[in-house]
Image (cartoon, each protein chain N blue to C red):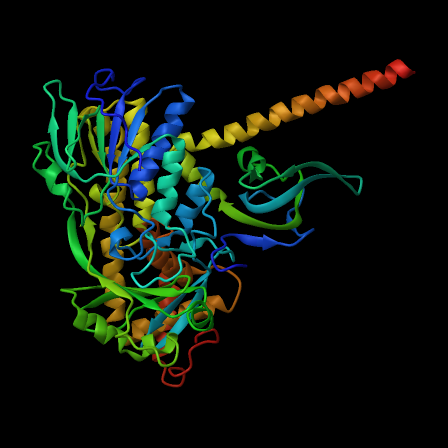
Length: 130
Length: 461
C-alpha cells in the first residue's frame, strides 16, 4: 500500500466475498476493477465488471439474504469496506444517502433490461434459423 | 478567481429556495464546501437552479498560516465511510498517510491497538498545503480538494473578506465585502472556524447568534521525512495518557513528511508542551536525535467545547465549528453532518427559523447531547490516568485482547474514544457493561498481584 491509500488491496484473483456468504458489509472500489461472478454447477460465469467509485455488495445488505454472487479482483484493486451497521444507521438518520444506492440499482436494472433484450433477440434468431 | 456577477436582486420565494434563489456560504473549509456541494447536488436532482457563492479569502494551496485551518487533520473511520457513500472518495494525493492502528502510550507501558476491520480507514492529512517550510507540495490540501468539488458542482468562488452583514427591508440578508461589493441573498450559511474574526459580524447582527465556547490547544508540526516516519511512528496515530500536570490529552499524527503534535490541557502554554515533549514516552516514538525545539511551525488555535446556543435564524445558518462540533474529536465529521443537515433543511423545508428549528436543530442537539456524555467519558479517562493500577489494568486488558481473537472490549472503547469513530454515548454504554467492568477489574487485580505486576501481556510494547 502507498502511504495515503485507504481501504484494502486485493491482488488479481483475490476474492472479496463469495456467493452464499452472509452480507455484513458493502464495498466501494477506490482503484482498479472487480469481477462479479455467478457460480453454478461448479462453473463461474462473469456477470459484469465493476469499476472505480462503484458500490458493490449492497444487495445482500438490503435483502438480508446471502450473497448472490462472488466478487473477485481483476488485476490489483483497492477496496474500501463499509460497515452494514454504520451504513444503515446513517441511512436512517439521513434518507437522502439512499439516493446513490437507488441510482446504482436503477442503472443496473437498465443494463439488465438491455441485456435481456439482446438475449431475447439471440433466442429469436436461433429459433428463426430452425 | 472568478466572482459572481453583481446582482443585487433575488427571485427566491418567501422563505423557500426556488429557481434563481441565491445562497452565500461564508467560509470555504470542509463545512462550507460540503454544504455547497450537497445543496447543489440535491437541488440538481429536483431541477432547482440555485446560485451559490462560496466566500473564502484564503488560498488553501499556499503553505504555512496563509492557507492553514489549524487542525490535527484526521478523517475518522466513520467519515471516510460516509463520504464514500456520498461518492466522495479521498485519493492518495490528499490523504498523506492511512492510519491502521493507534498506539496508546502511558508511563506503565504502551499498547498498539489495530483497526477492528484490519483495514486502513482513517486518513491523516493537512487541511492546507502544509507547514510554512514545506518545500515540495506533494499532496493536495484537503480543504482545497473539497472546495474544488463544490466549484465543480456549480458554486462560485468569491475571494473576498466579509466586512459587514445586514438585512434588507424585505428581510433578505446582505453581505458587504472589504472590496466594496454588496450582495443580497436568500440564505446565508456561516461556516467559518471559531478562530475567524468574521463571527463578530454575525454576533452583532441581532439575530441571537452567540459563538461557541472555546478552549485553547497547541498544534506543532515537525519535519521528520517520509522514511524516518515509516521507521518510527509508522502508520499509527500515537496517543498519550501521561500523568503530566495540566496535560489533558496529546497525540502525534504522522503525515507524509511531517508529524503533527496536538496537545490539550488546562491553561495550555508552550511550557506544558515542552514538558510533554521531554517525556521518555514521546522520545521513544520519535527518531533518535530528534530535537523538539526544531519545529516547522506552531499555532495556538481555539477549539469549540460548547456549541452555539442557537445556530440558526430566519435565512441564517451556522454550521461546522461556527455552530456545533464534536468534543475534542472528529470535528470534520461534525462539519459533514451539520453541512448535510443544513442543505437538506434549507432545500426541502425552507429557510425560516422555524424550519431550521424543526429540521436542522435536531442534528445539532444530537451532537451536543453526545458531547455531554463525552465529557463524562473523558472524565473517567482522566480519573484512570491519575491512578497507576487503573492505567496498568487498562493497558493489560487492551494488550491481552490484541493477542487473541474475540470480543475487543477495552480495545474497542479506546479505539473509538481516540479515533472519534463512534458516538460518545455508545462508548460510555459499552464501558458500563458488566462484562467490560468485570474484565477490567480482573485486569486491575492481576496488575496489583505482586508476582504478576512487572509483566504485561505479550503485545504490550
